[in-house]
Length: 104
Length: 382
Image (cartoon, rainbow over all chains, first blue to last red; front, side, top):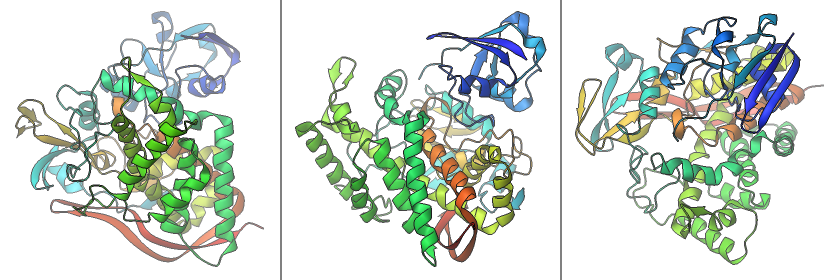
């Protein structure tokens, strides 16, 4: 269980006692900017979150498929696919931002 | 959950190199084959442009239409502004009441399938379901689907060179005229009242949106529905496995999209002379991004030729990639996921009575997409 805050354009979404997959938590809470179209199979890159530097080492490093997708999408420093993050107690208090999408 | 899959038409070509110079459309067009290369090219609009009316599809549709398809045949930053105009329609599948309406449609379709001794899936199940679902997406009366269904298989036949002024063009012109006379909440009415860069849209631009909504979302959804039903009919154990835990449905449907890859590829045009992984493309020459090849890339997928309904991660590009990724994907995913879930609830098993593959044969590749005919018998759960 952990307290996770999503910072969005529409304001902060605070989830107390979060557990499980970060993308599933975000979609359950209807966090703006987390579309998660593919449902968590690492295909669509629509569930990105930016993790502040002090929290990055608390997360498992990205697997190859996630790292490739973030690299190709030029997602930027600290950006992760939330579908690949399982919340642990070490993340209690973490605040993540929803990055702006690139040019479209 | 593994089964052999005959859908990869590019395995040999990928073994030889990153690009297949393919004879297509009276031209030689380099097809980019590898997953990461395809994804990178899809983002790189300055090198690989979509600002090429009629030439984004391969074969080109210069002989089929005279109106630019929107938003697909544009580049950033205009593309984003065009796309934003229709996003409210295409984001509806994320709303619970919309999902409930699609579920009702699917339940009706399945009840009809269970009530008959046998049913041809492609044209008697998938086409009506796709057409009726599209009325909801475009906010049109469901009865309008009767006409779309009656167009049958030939309305978008790209092999017929005399199709300019086709039934679709005539229909869209009339639909836009009607929306101008009697505005409602449908997509044509809303677009006629929308503005792009401060000016109203022309009727041609509204037709350009309509053309893509019909052409892009028809065969693709039909092929995917047919592929899902065909797979679960052939593998009754897979249907049981899904029934045991409905959380398995989302990744399973993604694997059906990967292995079906309804759109083999899409074109881009190089504005200047460009070296595409070793192949020279002259200015104004075309390049293909092969979604179908990228979805079987051995560097990204373990045993890509096998169907693994529990495949995760599954970085497929069946809906494209980057800013042009399919705007209808949430709608297509909702239909397939709901269909799988309601099959689990209502259908004990399906038996294949007759089948013919839907294939794409070109001089330099051949691939199976889905079914051109699939006759099934449905048995209800008791």
